[in-house]
Length: 590
Image: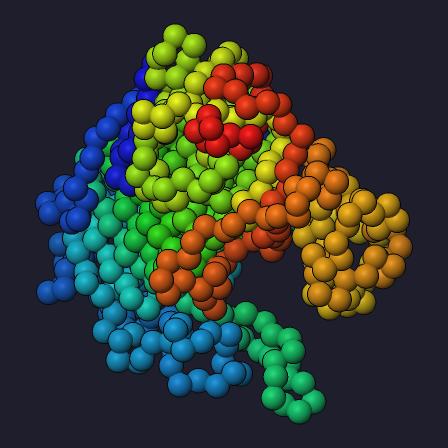
């Protein structure tokens, strides 16, 4: 079956798959393949006339006045829904003891006070429609809600348009947390059925959330002896995305899966501080930084069970992954199209603990490759010899010349990942427009901005003290299989972090294993390195703004050539993952 995708605004209808944060639940996967479509939706305005949702509290937004079930909204904090001008934001004119923000993160009190916050304070189902030009939906059921299984809110997006220039447009503060932050029991299999934060994208509606972020604001601080620098702090506020949840969150579609949510984000797009499960609907994200981020290190799980997810990082912050999970990324179904920043060393799909592709359709582009773990569905990784300009159609055809999958990424890239149920074992050809491409088969990667294929974290001895590590050393940036006693021939210490000395490695430290062929002996004989993609005018070479998220590891090393077969125009896909390097026109392929 031919599947053609034009990235940007492409929506594919998927029936909602309500997934079941416990460790014992089986992974909920949808076996229904994504229906191919090229339906472009002009989603500049939310649905103008939303229907009343039976059984829900209906909130209608308007700059002329907000109503709740047909009555003017309350201003009393005692009510389940009330309005106030009390948005949380990063205030201008504060000193270094206030927070970590810079001038770019600051907002005036006048700008903040112009925003109306619609507060939801009680459990229940709330349907939101209408438009507000300066506002926010904030869900907060109180400090005790995190441990209360009854503290559950379902927010139905019923044709809503929210614009917020100082903070997230939608934020869940305190609701029930079904998951745990215990590293000892953390795994890639979580069940978020009981989560307190639930979002439903109503069928037949178009919903827009245009939001900002809040840089880190301190709750308490410890200063150095001179009182001139913060040496330790506790966080009061830090919300990186336009659509944000402090607790695990489910995103669902309606019964028909036709609803659309468009997120336009100054920084990150859609974030959860623990787990995020996407079950249905059509979610389109244009973000300055990561399109999606789940940010509890080594624990968070981002799960995609159904629906359509379309992400484009626009590069306005200088970097950004399509999807960035600080724990695991698990794709069981639906359609995932993720474009990382054009000019930074970021990946279309990124995870610190492992990526699992078990179903659905995946098209991911970027300039870095993160480790893809054991997966139930075939996938192919193409590493191009040269940066590919956005807008050109890339097509994979089977041995009979039939199109299996085709896409036209808008962002530039050097890595492309394809996965689909139709990607069976066999021989394929790859095309850029009308030009047939060639490549070298081999597991691994060849360079660009460097690799992120390590995955996981190094094992530390029980008495490991990070305070005694050399300045600038980060063990997460060590290559797999690194052994300080057995340095590869040609090792260049100038490429190590500042202050690193092998003899200072703590006793008993076991870094992760190096992928086969990643040693310095496989570097180009002439010592050359790959040229990075050109920075656009005004680019900042990947400097993340204060308040931005991101993974703790990753690197931007030189071009590491690997052992690979002769270039061929035949791309042999085998069970599991197939890797191809030096992909390009036949004359350019290695």
